[in-house]
Length: 385
View (tube, rainbow, N blue to C red):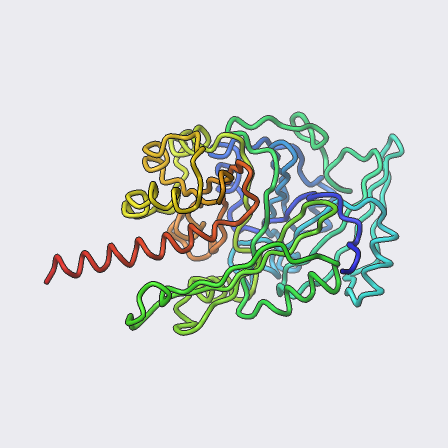
Protein backbone atom coordinates (compact mmCIF):
# COMPACT_ATOMS: atom_id res chain seq x y z
CA UNK A 1 0.00 0.00 0.00
CA UNK A 2 1.13 3.55 -0.75
CA UNK A 3 1.86 5.84 2.13
CA UNK A 4 -0.60 8.70 2.65
CA UNK A 5 0.09 12.35 1.96
CA UNK A 6 0.26 13.45 5.60
CA UNK A 7 -3.42 14.23 6.28
CA UNK A 8 -4.15 14.69 9.98
CA UNK A 9 -7.86 15.50 9.73
CA UNK A 10 -10.66 17.47 8.10
CA UNK A 11 -10.19 21.25 7.92
CA UNK A 12 -13.32 22.62 6.21
CA UNK A 13 -15.52 22.45 3.14
CA UNK A 14 -16.54 25.22 0.77
CA UNK A 15 -20.18 25.47 -0.30
CA UNK A 16 -21.32 27.73 -3.15
CA UNK A 17 -24.91 29.00 -3.12
CA UNK A 18 -27.08 31.55 -4.87
CA UNK A 19 -28.83 32.61 -1.66
CA UNK A 20 -26.42 33.28 1.22
CA UNK A 21 -29.10 34.57 3.58
CA UNK A 22 -31.08 31.36 3.22
CA UNK A 23 -27.93 29.39 4.04
CA UNK A 24 -27.31 31.61 7.04
CA UNK A 25 -30.76 30.78 8.39
CA UNK A 26 -30.24 27.08 7.71
CA UNK A 27 -26.90 26.82 9.53
CA UNK A 28 -27.51 29.34 12.31
CA UNK A 29 -31.22 28.93 13.02
CA UNK A 30 -31.78 25.26 12.19
CA UNK A 31 -28.43 23.52 12.78
CA UNK A 32 -27.19 25.84 15.58
CA UNK A 33 -23.89 26.52 13.83
CA UNK A 34 -22.17 29.71 14.97
CA UNK A 35 -20.88 32.35 12.56
CA UNK A 36 -17.13 32.38 13.25
CA UNK A 37 -15.55 34.25 10.33
CA UNK A 38 -16.27 36.20 7.17
CA UNK A 39 -14.33 37.45 4.16
CA UNK A 40 -12.83 40.89 4.75
CA UNK A 41 -13.89 43.81 2.59
CA UNK A 42 -10.54 43.55 0.80
CA UNK A 43 -11.02 39.84 0.06
CA UNK A 44 -14.60 40.43 -1.10
CA UNK A 45 -13.35 43.08 -3.49
CA UNK A 46 -10.56 40.88 -4.86
CA UNK A 47 -12.54 37.64 -5.06
CA UNK A 48 -15.87 39.04 -6.25
CA UNK A 49 -17.78 36.90 -3.77
CA UNK A 50 -19.21 37.12 -0.26
CA UNK A 51 -18.12 34.36 2.11
CA UNK A 52 -19.24 33.44 5.62
CA UNK A 53 -17.84 30.64 7.78
CA UNK A 54 -20.08 28.66 10.14
CA UNK A 55 -18.74 26.37 12.83
CA UNK A 56 -19.82 23.62 15.23
CA UNK A 57 -17.06 22.03 17.28
CA UNK A 58 -14.34 21.16 14.76
CA UNK A 59 -16.67 21.41 11.74
CA UNK A 60 -16.22 24.43 9.45
CA UNK A 61 -18.32 25.22 6.40
CA UNK A 62 -17.48 28.26 4.28
CA UNK A 63 -20.50 29.41 2.29
CA UNK A 64 -19.94 31.75 -0.65
CA UNK A 65 -22.14 33.54 -3.15
CA UNK A 66 -21.08 35.41 -6.28
CA UNK A 67 -20.99 39.19 -6.59
CA UNK A 68 -19.24 39.26 -9.96
CA UNK A 69 -19.35 36.96 -12.95
CA UNK A 70 -15.60 36.48 -12.86
CA UNK A 71 -15.59 34.95 -9.39
CA UNK A 72 -14.96 31.27 -8.65
CA UNK A 73 -18.45 31.02 -7.20
CA UNK A 74 -20.03 32.40 -10.37
CA UNK A 75 -18.03 30.04 -12.59
CA UNK A 76 -19.12 27.10 -10.45
CA UNK A 77 -22.78 28.14 -10.52
CA UNK A 78 -22.72 28.51 -14.31
CA UNK A 79 -22.08 24.78 -14.52
CA UNK A 80 -23.80 23.43 -11.41
CA UNK A 81 -26.55 24.13 -8.90
CA UNK A 82 -25.50 24.96 -5.33
CA UNK A 83 -22.99 22.47 -3.99
CA UNK A 84 -19.54 21.67 -2.64
CA UNK A 85 -16.77 23.43 -4.58
CA UNK A 86 -13.83 22.27 -2.46
CA UNK A 87 -12.87 20.08 0.48
CA UNK A 88 -9.96 21.05 2.75
CA UNK A 89 -7.81 18.76 4.89
CA UNK A 90 -5.22 19.52 7.54
CA UNK A 91 -1.71 18.24 6.89
CA UNK A 92 1.37 18.13 9.11
CA UNK A 93 3.92 19.32 6.54
CA UNK A 94 2.77 20.96 3.31
CA UNK A 95 6.16 20.65 1.62
CA UNK A 96 6.12 16.90 2.11
CA UNK A 97 2.48 16.72 1.00
CA UNK A 98 3.27 18.61 -2.22
CA UNK A 99 6.33 16.43 -2.87
CA UNK A 100 4.32 13.22 -2.53
CA UNK A 101 1.39 14.55 -4.58
CA UNK A 102 3.61 15.64 -7.46
CA UNK A 103 5.56 12.38 -7.40
CA UNK A 104 2.27 10.53 -7.88
CA UNK A 105 0.88 12.69 -10.65
CA UNK A 106 -1.25 15.02 -8.55
CA UNK A 107 -2.23 18.19 -10.43
CA UNK A 108 -1.65 21.40 -8.47
CA UNK A 109 -4.02 24.20 -9.46
CA UNK A 110 -1.57 26.94 -8.40
CA UNK A 111 1.61 27.46 -6.43
CA UNK A 112 1.25 26.93 -2.67
CA UNK A 113 -0.17 29.91 -0.76
CA UNK A 114 1.60 31.16 2.36
CA UNK A 115 0.57 33.86 4.83
CA UNK A 116 1.48 35.01 8.34
CA UNK A 117 -0.69 36.63 10.98
CA UNK A 118 0.25 39.43 13.36
CA UNK A 119 1.47 37.01 16.03
CA UNK A 120 3.72 35.10 13.62
CA UNK A 121 1.43 32.17 12.98
CA UNK A 122 1.61 30.70 9.48
CA UNK A 123 -1.01 29.38 7.08
CA UNK A 124 0.07 27.41 4.01
CA UNK A 125 -2.17 25.66 1.51
CA UNK A 126 -2.36 24.21 -1.96
CA UNK A 127 -5.28 23.10 -4.13
CA UNK A 128 -5.31 20.13 -6.49
CA UNK A 129 -7.66 18.96 -9.21
CA UNK A 130 -9.72 15.81 -8.61
CA UNK A 131 -11.73 13.31 -10.70
CA UNK A 132 -14.86 14.91 -9.18
CA UNK A 133 -15.22 17.51 -11.91
CA UNK A 134 -15.19 21.00 -10.45
CA UNK A 135 -14.54 19.85 -6.87
CA UNK A 136 -11.01 20.72 -5.71
CA UNK A 137 -9.12 19.34 -2.70
CA UNK A 138 -7.14 21.76 -0.54
CA UNK A 139 -4.38 20.75 1.85
CA UNK A 140 -3.74 23.14 4.72
CA UNK A 141 -0.83 23.44 7.14
CA UNK A 142 -1.49 25.60 10.20
CA UNK A 143 1.23 26.73 12.61
CA UNK A 144 -0.35 28.76 15.43
CA UNK A 145 -2.68 30.33 12.88
CA UNK A 146 -6.15 30.75 14.38
CA UNK A 147 -7.98 32.60 11.58
CA UNK A 148 -9.98 30.61 9.06
CA UNK A 149 -7.76 31.58 6.12
CA UNK A 150 -5.88 34.62 4.76
CA UNK A 151 -8.32 37.46 4.08
CA UNK A 152 -10.90 36.27 6.62
CA UNK A 153 -11.71 38.11 9.83
CA UNK A 154 -13.13 36.57 12.99
CA UNK A 155 -16.78 37.00 13.95
CA UNK A 156 -18.22 36.17 17.37
CA UNK A 157 -16.01 33.75 19.29
CA UNK A 158 -13.81 33.40 16.21
CA UNK A 159 -12.56 30.53 14.09
CA UNK A 160 -10.07 29.43 16.74
CA UNK A 161 -12.88 28.47 19.12
CA UNK A 162 -14.77 25.18 19.28
CA UNK A 163 -18.34 26.50 19.09
CA UNK A 164 -20.74 24.38 21.15
CA UNK A 165 -23.65 22.87 19.23
CA UNK A 166 -26.93 22.08 20.92
CA UNK A 167 -27.38 18.97 18.76
CA UNK A 168 -23.95 17.56 19.58
CA UNK A 169 -22.46 18.14 16.11
CA UNK A 170 -18.69 18.36 16.60
CA UNK A 171 -17.01 16.43 13.78
CA UNK A 172 -17.31 14.93 10.30
CA UNK A 173 -17.73 11.14 10.14
CA UNK A 174 -17.31 10.74 6.37
CA UNK A 175 -17.85 12.35 2.97
CA UNK A 176 -19.72 10.67 0.10
CA UNK A 177 -19.44 11.44 -3.61
CA UNK A 178 -21.37 10.18 -6.66
CA UNK A 179 -20.19 9.61 -10.21
CA UNK A 180 -21.33 7.67 -13.26
CA UNK A 181 -18.17 5.57 -12.91
CA UNK A 182 -16.22 5.36 -9.70
CA UNK A 183 -13.02 3.57 -10.68
CA UNK A 184 -11.23 6.77 -11.79
CA UNK A 185 -12.19 8.32 -8.44
CA UNK A 186 -11.33 5.32 -6.25
CA UNK A 187 -8.12 4.72 -8.22
CA UNK A 188 -7.11 8.36 -7.69
CA UNK A 189 -7.69 8.06 -3.94
CA UNK A 190 -5.43 5.02 -3.93
CA UNK A 191 -2.69 6.00 -6.37
CA UNK A 192 -2.44 9.74 -5.66
CA UNK A 193 -3.59 10.11 -2.05
CA UNK A 194 -2.36 6.71 -0.85
CA UNK A 195 -5.75 5.72 0.61
CA UNK A 196 -6.72 2.12 1.32
CA UNK A 197 -9.99 0.18 0.84
CA UNK A 198 -12.20 0.24 3.94
CA UNK A 199 -15.66 -1.06 2.98
CA UNK A 200 -17.78 -1.81 -0.09
CA UNK A 201 -21.26 -2.92 -1.13
CA UNK A 202 -23.20 -3.66 -4.27
CA UNK A 203 -26.98 -3.77 -4.18
CA UNK A 204 -29.93 -3.65 -6.57
CA UNK A 205 -33.70 -3.85 -6.18
CA UNK A 206 -33.61 -6.90 -8.48
CA UNK A 207 -31.91 -8.72 -5.60
CA UNK A 208 -35.31 -8.52 -3.92
CA UNK A 209 -37.77 -8.71 -6.82
CA UNK A 210 -36.42 -10.51 -9.88
CA UNK A 211 -39.39 -9.76 -12.12
CA UNK A 212 -39.75 -6.00 -11.73
CA UNK A 213 -39.65 -3.87 -14.89
CA UNK A 214 -37.71 -1.02 -13.33
CA UNK A 215 -35.36 -0.57 -10.41
CA UNK A 216 -32.43 1.14 -8.82
CA UNK A 217 -29.03 -0.01 -7.68
CA UNK A 218 -25.61 1.17 -6.63
CA UNK A 219 -22.07 0.05 -6.09
CA UNK A 220 -20.18 1.78 -3.31
CA UNK A 221 -16.53 1.69 -2.19
CA UNK A 222 -15.20 3.47 0.88
CA UNK A 223 -11.54 4.48 0.88
CA UNK A 224 -9.73 5.78 3.94
CA UNK A 225 -6.52 7.22 5.26
CA UNK A 226 -5.62 4.98 8.23
CA UNK A 227 -3.33 7.60 9.75
CA UNK A 228 -6.07 10.25 10.11
CA UNK A 229 -9.28 8.24 9.86
CA UNK A 230 -10.53 10.43 6.99
CA UNK A 231 -13.01 8.43 4.90
CA UNK A 232 -14.44 8.96 1.41
CA UNK A 233 -17.35 6.88 0.12
CA UNK A 234 -17.90 6.78 -3.65
CA UNK A 235 -21.09 5.56 -5.36
CA UNK A 236 -21.87 4.65 -8.95
CA UNK A 237 -25.16 3.44 -10.52
CA UNK A 238 -25.65 -0.28 -11.07
CA UNK A 239 -27.35 -1.88 -14.05
CA UNK A 240 -29.95 -2.87 -15.07
CA UNK A 241 -32.00 0.33 -15.13
CA UNK A 242 -28.72 2.22 -14.75
CA UNK A 243 -30.33 5.58 -15.51
CA UNK A 244 -33.10 4.96 -12.95
CA UNK A 245 -30.59 4.82 -10.11
CA UNK A 246 -30.65 7.62 -7.55
CA UNK A 247 -26.91 7.93 -8.15
CA UNK A 248 -27.46 8.63 -11.86
CA UNK A 249 -30.18 11.11 -10.93
CA UNK A 250 -27.77 12.96 -8.63
CA UNK A 251 -25.21 13.26 -11.42
CA UNK A 252 -27.90 14.60 -13.75
CA UNK A 253 -29.20 17.09 -11.18
CA UNK A 254 -25.68 18.18 -10.24
CA UNK A 255 -24.56 18.43 -13.90
CA UNK A 256 -21.66 16.11 -13.17
CA UNK A 257 -19.96 14.08 -10.47
CA UNK A 258 -19.74 15.70 -7.07
CA UNK A 259 -20.15 15.48 -3.31
CA UNK A 260 -23.54 13.94 -2.48
CA UNK A 261 -23.51 14.26 1.29
CA UNK A 262 -21.44 14.89 4.40
CA UNK A 263 -22.11 12.92 7.59
CA UNK A 264 -21.96 14.66 10.98
CA UNK A 265 -21.10 12.47 13.97
CA UNK A 266 -23.19 12.90 17.14
CA UNK A 267 -23.26 11.11 20.50
CA UNK A 268 -27.06 11.16 20.98
CA UNK A 269 -28.97 10.92 17.73
CA UNK A 270 -32.36 10.67 19.48
CA UNK A 271 -32.21 14.10 21.08
CA UNK A 272 -30.43 15.53 18.03
CA UNK A 273 -33.13 14.49 15.55
CA UNK A 274 -35.93 15.31 17.97
CA UNK A 275 -34.78 18.90 18.31
CA UNK A 276 -33.80 19.31 14.64
CA UNK A 277 -37.35 18.38 13.66
CA UNK A 278 -38.75 21.07 15.95
CA UNK A 279 -36.50 23.51 14.11
CA UNK A 280 -38.02 22.58 10.77
CA UNK A 281 -35.30 20.23 9.48
CA UNK A 282 -36.88 17.68 7.14
CA UNK A 283 -35.58 14.11 6.93
CA UNK A 284 -36.03 11.36 4.36
CA UNK A 285 -38.89 9.06 5.33
CA UNK A 286 -38.70 5.34 6.05
CA UNK A 287 -41.56 2.89 5.34
CA UNK A 288 -43.31 1.39 8.37
CA UNK A 289 -42.45 -2.10 7.18
CA UNK A 290 -38.75 -1.35 7.83
CA UNK A 291 -39.51 -0.95 11.54
CA UNK A 292 -41.98 -3.86 11.57
CA UNK A 293 -39.10 -6.07 10.42
CA UNK A 294 -36.46 -4.46 12.66
CA UNK A 295 -36.63 -6.81 15.71
CA UNK A 296 -36.18 -9.86 13.48
CA UNK A 297 -33.37 -8.23 11.52
CA UNK A 298 -31.49 -7.22 14.68
CA UNK A 299 -31.74 -10.81 15.90
CA UNK A 300 -30.35 -12.10 12.59
CA UNK A 301 -27.48 -9.59 12.85
CA UNK A 302 -26.64 -10.64 16.38
CA UNK A 303 -27.43 -7.22 17.85
CA UNK A 304 -28.92 -7.57 21.34
CA UNK A 305 -27.64 -4.41 23.02
CA UNK A 306 -29.41 -1.49 21.32
CA UNK A 307 -29.86 1.01 24.15
CA UNK A 308 -32.36 3.15 22.29
CA UNK A 309 -36.05 2.23 22.37
CA UNK A 310 -37.07 0.79 19.02
CA UNK A 311 -40.37 2.66 19.21
CA UNK A 312 -38.43 5.91 19.55
CA UNK A 313 -36.30 5.03 16.53
CA UNK A 314 -39.47 4.31 14.55
CA UNK A 315 -41.10 7.56 15.68
CA UNK A 316 -38.07 9.54 14.55
CA UNK A 317 -37.41 7.36 11.45
CA UNK A 318 -33.83 6.53 12.51
CA UNK A 319 -32.17 3.54 10.80
CA UNK A 320 -30.16 0.83 12.59
CA UNK A 321 -27.39 -1.42 11.26
CA UNK A 322 -24.37 -3.38 12.44
CA UNK A 323 -23.48 -6.88 13.61
CA UNK A 324 -22.45 -8.85 16.71
CA UNK A 325 -23.54 -6.29 19.29
CA UNK A 326 -21.90 -3.42 17.46
CA UNK A 327 -24.31 -1.03 15.79
CA UNK A 328 -24.77 2.38 14.27
CA UNK A 329 -27.75 4.72 13.94
CA UNK A 330 -28.23 7.01 10.96
CA UNK A 331 -30.71 9.34 9.31
CA UNK A 332 -30.55 11.50 6.16
CA UNK A 333 -31.85 15.01 5.71
CA UNK A 334 -33.78 15.79 2.56
CA UNK A 335 -31.72 17.16 -0.29
CA UNK A 336 -31.63 20.92 -0.56
CA UNK A 337 -33.63 20.99 -3.82
CA UNK A 338 -36.52 19.16 -2.09
CA UNK A 339 -36.13 21.14 1.11
CA UNK A 340 -36.57 24.45 -0.71
CA UNK A 341 -38.60 23.13 -3.67
CA UNK A 342 -36.01 24.67 -5.98
CA UNK A 343 -33.75 22.72 -8.33
CA UNK A 344 -30.99 25.34 -8.15
CA UNK A 345 -30.62 24.59 -4.43
CA UNK A 346 -28.93 21.36 -5.55
CA UNK A 347 -29.10 17.64 -4.70
CA UNK A 348 -26.69 17.79 -1.71
CA UNK A 349 -27.81 16.69 1.77
CA UNK A 350 -26.46 15.97 5.26
CA UNK A 351 -26.44 12.74 7.25
CA UNK A 352 -26.53 12.42 11.04
CA UNK A 353 -24.78 9.33 12.42
CA UNK A 354 -24.19 7.85 15.86
CA UNK A 355 -21.79 4.93 16.19
CA UNK A 356 -21.96 2.32 18.93
CA UNK A 357 -18.96 0.27 17.91
CA UNK A 358 -19.91 -0.41 14.28
CA UNK A 359 -17.57 1.26 11.75
CA UNK A 360 -19.63 0.37 8.65
CA UNK A 361 -21.82 2.40 6.34
CA UNK A 362 -25.23 0.81 6.66
CA UNK A 363 -25.20 -2.05 4.16
CA UNK A 364 -28.05 -3.71 6.04
CA UNK A 365 -30.06 -0.50 5.84
CA UNK A 366 -29.73 -0.41 2.05
CA UNK A 367 -31.04 -3.94 1.76
CA UNK A 368 -33.71 -3.65 4.46
CA UNK A 369 -35.07 -0.44 2.98
CA UNK A 370 -35.22 -1.94 -0.50
CA UNK A 371 -36.93 -5.08 0.83
CA UNK A 372 -39.47 -3.17 2.92
CA UNK A 373 -40.34 -0.88 0.01
CA UNK A 374 -40.80 -3.90 -2.26
CA UNK A 375 -43.12 -5.56 0.27
CA UNK A 376 -45.13 -2.38 0.76
CA UNK A 377 -45.53 -2.04 -3.01
CA UNK A 378 -46.57 -5.70 -3.35
CA UNK A 379 -49.11 -5.35 -0.52
CA UNK A 380 -50.52 -2.21 -2.10
CA UNK A 381 -50.87 -4.00 -5.42
CA UNK A 382 -52.69 -6.91 -3.75
CA UNK A 383 -55.01 -4.50 -1.98
CA UNK A 384 -55.88 -2.82 -5.24
CA UNK A 385 -56.58 -6.15 -6.98
